[in-house]
Amino acid sequence: MCGIFGYTGNREAKEILLHGLRRLEYRGYDSAGICVIGENGDFKRLRVRGNLDILENHLANQVMPGKIGIAHTRWATHGAPSEQNAHPHSDCHENLFVVHNGIIENFSQLRGELLERGHEFSSETDTEIIAHLIEEKYEGDLSVAVREAIRQLEGSFAIAVVHRGEPETLVAARRESPLVIGVGTDEWFVASAVPAFLSMTRKVIFLEDNEIVTVCGKSLRITDLDGVEIERKPQEITWDLDAAEKSGYEDFMLKEIFEQPRAFMDTLADKFSREGEISIEGFFSNKDYVMSLRRIVIVACGTSYHAGLISRYLFEQWAKVPVEVEIASEFRYRGAVLSEQDLIIAISQSGETADTLASVREAKAAKVPVIALVNVVGSQMTREADSVIYTHAGPEIGVAATKTFTSQMAALAVLALHFGRIRDALSDGKYGVIAEALRGIPVLMKDVLADIEPIAECAQEYSHCENFLFLGRGISYPVALEGALKLKEISYIHAEGYPAGEMKHGPIALLDRRVPVVAVVTRDSLYEKMVSNIEEVKARGAPVIAIASTGDPDIEKVCDRVLRVPETIELLSPPLTVIPLQLLAYHIAKIRGCNVDQPRNLAKTVTVE
Ligand code: G6P
Image 1 (cartoon, helix red, strand yellow):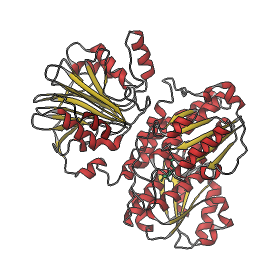
Image 2 (cartoon, protein in one colour):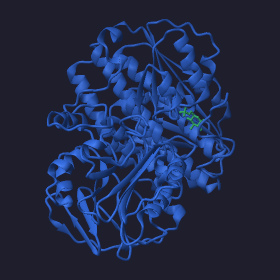
Image 3 (cartoon, protein in one colour):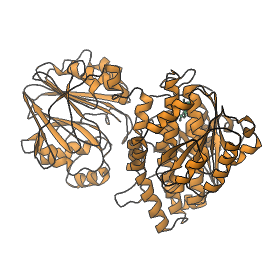
Image 4 (cartoon, protein in one colour):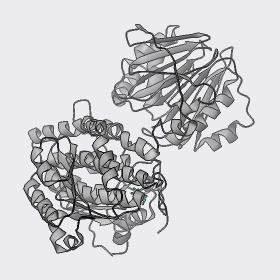
């Protein structure tokens, strides 16, 4: 996720662009840049590594005359955070400039073709290829060139483009990444989100997928990919700034829960080739290395630890590698016996968690290779690990992890499949079925998010309870742990996650009608066993809330409330079953008046022991 912003009108662009970027900073803050074009086609561009303060400091004494420009605040995906990789990017001759939010999936192929045709690149980004594609198509009309260029792109993008030869024209386009047009008086704004220009205009036009907008002077023109004109009237925004930053959602956490299909898809996007084969690179892709692997040890904290627990089932069943999953704060002091045939996978959203980092250092000291699975590009862990795999969830503002959790599952599933392939543990047929199901998950996530009313009603009914028990078996056991963690983190209710089969050995003593039990009971290989556990709960008078498959009418008979999720293959159910649990925790916390984005005593990133 990045923030893009563009302006054309009758005022000086520099300050307006900086103001807009400030309002988009929550979308990314590892580098920033701005480019302004003067009336005679002169341009000034400045890019920095780091946040907006750094950009502003650099700009403080610089004159940047011009009434048109584009700006960007970056959350790195392709290429580390650096000045060279910061936007705006340009073509070979610095005639045109592009800012981009999204991921171009066929970037390697397009880059290769452009190189063959003599283009030279100055960054490692996928964005730079867009500038070069537009350059190739430019024959005096920027709008047409952008349209021709984006037809070649696969993946997601929102772009804003300016050209020195047309120093009043701003062209923008989108597919799957957000883009909104602000309509002023003889001035125009394009941005990733409304807050960027809300203090300057409340009149907006939302651009749809595969549409291109060209604004210049008093004119606005929207077309589709074939150049057919589209009529669209502006709407009036009534939200305040705070709501606008959250795209109209009440809280960042809720917004991030709803971003999960996108985050999951983006995380998969750069890990599969166009032919559906896995394309991730690192020492772990070497056949001899993977064949010699004796054990995987996963280290992580909090929600990332739960993603690790889920992935154990995948690595063991698909790749036939034994896996241990360790809480990093325990692992680092345990004097664990490690060998060079082990592989450490450190999972961390932030890449800065002190205990996970210390575990990475322990492993390195024992000469064990380390893969870091991280969301924040350029974070400490990415510098210390031997290889890095990224989730592409974008910045997560809510302290309680949601979209980064499901994105971790996406990345870990790809890695488990990758090892399964290399170790010949998966037949072609089985690989095909799993890969297809994996790529189908975002659509199923959207289905879960389309029907959230029953979850809110359920929260209303049980929000007064002071204790909850979450149960699951097999792949749903770590999901139950995560459901309990979410509830306690944001609503301060005591909640325990337990493997359902273990309930008889303790937690059953706690049960009565005041202790709701949340049971994750999809139609899988342990379904009957799980139903027996639910019967045991019911016999003790505790109410049962089931997270169950859509095609399971019988579950209603043994449960008080049923929250439905679509069916998929067993090991891929967690990104679906966890969503109702996130939303249940969210709604209960809201009913109890808690601050869900910043729960008491918790920090987003724990950089101390
Ligand atoms: C904190 C956060 C959690 C997160 C955990 C691990 O406790 O509040 O949401 O799961 O740290 O963070 P990491 O960045 O290493 O995934």
